[in-house]
Amino acid sequence: VERVAMSVYRNTIWFLKGIHEYTRGGYEAASKHFVEKDLDVSVSGKSFMITGANSGIGKAAAYMIAKKGGTVHLVCRNKERAEDAKADIIKESGNKDIHVHILDLSEPRKVWEFAEAFKKKHKSLNVLINNAGCMVNQREVNAEGLEMNFACNTLGTFILTKSLIPLLEKSSNPRVITVSSGGMLVQKLHLDDLQSEQGRFNGTMVYAQNKRQQVVMTEEWAKVHSNIHFSVMHPGWADTPAVQSAMPDFYRSMKDKLRTADQGADTVVWLAVSEAALAHPSGLFFQDRSPVPTHLPLAWTKTSPEDKQKFINILDDLAKTFQPH
Image (tube, rainbow, N blue to C red; front, side, top):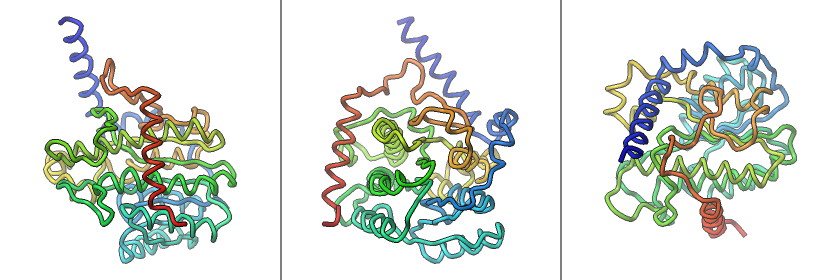
């Protein structure tokens, strides 16, 4: 009993500490230790793909990278919003090498088709930033019968990355960064219910499960593709349109403490362009430019290597059913 009580106490302290770290105040405290010259780089001649880049963290990251001279491919679901974002980024950065691609990541066949077409048209891709995501609070399925959150956050991200890995491997200094969430700390990988068919549907917990899945994908990719630097990160709680629409109650109660989109994007950009990021091993989970644990102390959320590999095999088999022939 004493051991269990101590575990609960430690996890509670860790969680409360995490809540503060996720806010604007947490970012401001962490940023005092940032090395300013880490981002004092030019990425002219390098190409970056950012999903979900028309607003929030994705748009902020796109602007920061464009300002450093990078070629930026904005992958967005809505053409009008994407074109508006492109115009804003060009105007604010002075960089005209910004390109719009329209794609809904919840449509696996379209993801395959887009990635294959991109590889034929472009000779290199230095950095892929998997930022797009969704939180659908009622269980919905797409045309293929896939639960929407899983289709977008997990399978879409998996297919896009898997298809673009050969192009990344041919490019110099390739990196893949996936924007996850600290919410995944309360989730263990569930292999038996990837489509959220069992029990009562909770969109927030399904989203957190998808974010745990992204962490596992990153860890497994890093083992197999040693010449690509993979990382996954938590941006903290940022004031973005996605948070406002998906979590209105949370937004209303926390809006004065939320990070700006730029603050949320800081570690994304650091992982994408800095040499300092490459000093860390591939496959780690980052928050505010530092690697952090993927599990709470003494947590029940850990998964065996066998189950992690089984998860990748499931995704691989599912992805192949939508692959063009």
